[in-house]
Image (tube, rainbow, N blue to C red; front, side, top):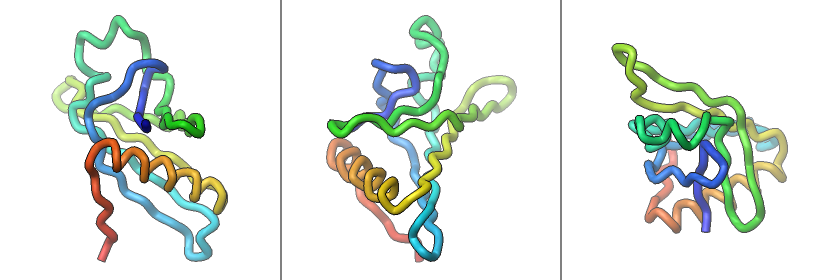
Length: 114
């Protein structure tokens, strides 16, 4: 099982758009997650706590980023964007294993940029 959380113990049901970049030598990269109208910004979620980061959870453990930004339109929250920095080939492999599990759990596919 693989899932995304913004508050530990509270799974996010909204599936993000994920964009990946990777350095030419493959040693580093980034993953940008964009959530439109995620559960965590709904008014009934306020009692669960504050967003502490984005937690990518699976059977291997957690991948964590604190780089989380909210998008507001006319003063109302509309989305969340998170940036996960990948600093080594080993971290890249670990991230891809998480994404493979997350994709299988949510019937997602990978589309390579053209």
